[in-house]
Length: 117
Length: 115
Image (cartoon, rainbow over the protein chains, first blue to last red):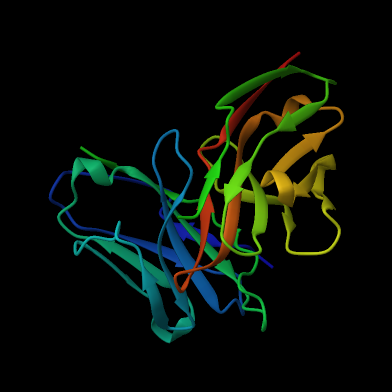
């Protein structure tokens, strides 16, 4: 396993610009999650996919945020018209769904730190 | 609502001393519990997890945690800390919350090690 990878690791942008982050999960993991972590806080759930289907979105995910997972492999998270409040670490995690379990073990990537000026 | 409380925001211990980080959860069904560690600017690394069975679970790097249902707790312990253990530690509860397969995290405990 090469682990979960995220790109870029850091992004600095100006308010109002659009940004896109990529996440490559552990191969053959069928679930992929996005979390947001602000300074001094624990990660907060944004959304998750099972294969290519987006199954849940948090209320934190405003209409400026969109996530995709085409073909059930890598995923992208796009933020349109960024605001200073979007500054945070965006974490991706992946897991393998185990039949009969309500949850499974999520493995996290290194994160993308976004700074909106 | 499901929640996790880590009462200690910051803990300082001396190298070689024992460690206990507290975690209390609120969840209406059988909880699945996790401890993750995060070094500055990095992602989260899984230390250990509890799904069922033995309530004392062993993890990596010499950590262990004990699930106590009566106290709604899942405290993390290590008998002797090393300087490399300095990091942020997060407790999380997992499960199908209202259809979402998500983790709910505590605020974290920052661990500082004195030489």
